Length: 323
Image (cartoon, rainbow, N blue to C red; front, side, top):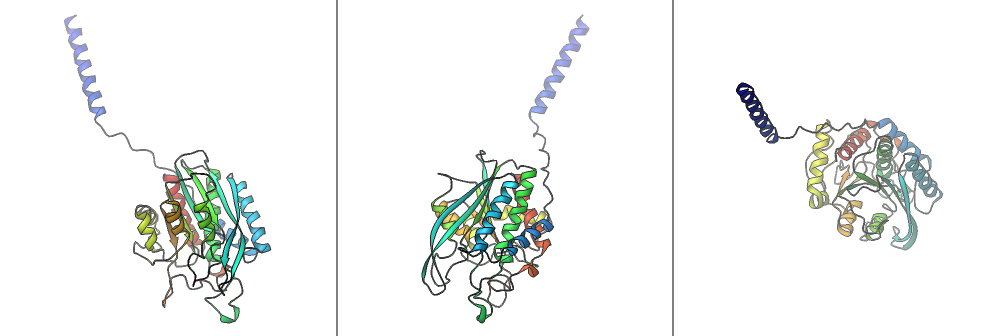
C-alpha cells in the first residue's frame, strides 16, 4: 500500500513538472500558408482582351464596353461588385474644362470581414500620345502597360481569390479617369481615386493598407520605392519588397528609393488616410522616370512580358494570402 502511494505521488509530481514545462514553451509555429500559383499566361490574355476594345478613353464606346466586361469578369470570379458612377471635371491638353463620366469598378471578397486590404490599378487609357510622335500627339494610346497590365494582374488575382478565399477581406479597385490629366495643371490626374477618396462607396470605409499597381507588365522593369510610398507606408513597402525577394524577384524589386510622382496611391493616402503604396515601373532613362514607351503609341502588347506579370502577381497574392 505504502509502495503504491509513493509511486502515485511520483507520477503526479512528474506530470506536474511536464505540464509546467509545456506551459512555458513557445506554441508550435502555424502551418505555412498555401499560396496558389499566379498565372502570367492568364494575365497576359487579360491584357489582350482589354486592348481588343480599343483605347479605353472616358466617354467612348470602348470605355463603356470594357467597363461592362470588367464588372462581369469580377462577378464570374465570385466577387461582390459595385460600380461607382459620377461625373468629374477634367482638363484637356489645351487646359479647357471638360466633364467626363466616370466608373470606378470595385470587387470585394469576404465583404463582411473587418480586417481588409485594398488592391488597385487604373483601367482607363490616356487620350493623348504626348510623349511620342508629335504628329500623333492627339491620338489615344493603346495602354497595354499603362493601365492594362495592372488591371490584368488584378483580374488574375481575383480569379485565384474566387477559387480560394484569403483570410482577410480584399477589395479590388479599378480607378477611372486616371490618365486624362494635363501635366501643367495640378490635381488633374487620378480623378477616379480622388473622387472615391472623398466619396467612398461605403460610408466610413477603412482598410489596413493598400497596394496600387501601375505599369507592371513591361520586360525588365525596375520597381523602385517611390517617395510617397516610403513616406506613407514604409512598413508596407518593406513587406512587399521582402516578399518579392523571397520569391526570387528581387532583381525586379530593388530596395532603393525612387522618384517623387503623383499616382492614385497619393490621394488614397492624403484624402482617405489609408496607408497605400505604389508598384510602378521606373525604368526610364535619359531624364525619363517611367518605362520607355510611356505615353506613346508603342505601349502595346509587344512590350508586355508574361514573366513580369507573374512576378508582380505572385508577390501580390502572396502578401494577401499571408495576412
